[in-house]
Image 1 (cartoon, one colour):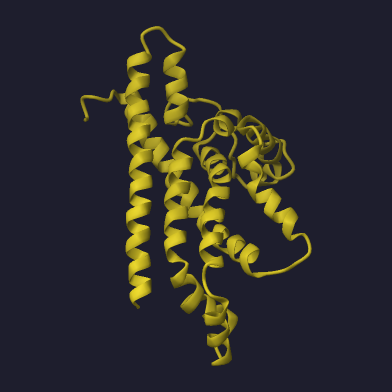
Image 2 (image 1 turned 120 degrees about the horizontal axis):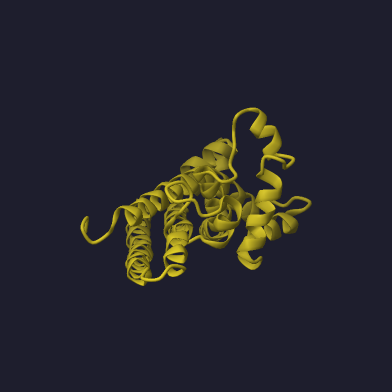
Length: 231
């Protein structure tokens, strides 16, 4: 495998794994919170929040990347303030992680929300009548029973982050060794004569990772569901 992929290809794979890991890890707490809010709470603007969460799914990825550049670029309203603190996302691998997280977030939230909605509210109410606080009910009842969906959503978000291209290349460009992930590397290889072989190798890696993530989400989800059901 080491000889099969060249140094530039390996750098793209390693960066993609790094970006996807941090994108998934950083967005998971927010995904759980928003999924729970959408599943259990009633509040003004709920439909607006739901629309904003799922907006990256229907917007062209380039548009999402451009909006990120406007907001988080060094001259943007948020990015300018962060830049004064020494935090820069545009044209950095951290920006690639932000773009990947934004694009993968709807899949994560949807899977977790459906799992939370499948939890019988009567079980939560029974725990509350026994004196448990809302936070304790969530930690001891809702969260364990929704765990299969959380696991599945996390793995699917990781796979989506691995394949993100449009928003990433718009927000952080395609800088070798810094922001060139697998999709960006495939695009770059296809622009030069003789690069089809390297592009095909990365395509195979992408397919293997995507199929592996889907298989893993199914296996782990079933095992977790079996343990929760047998508890």
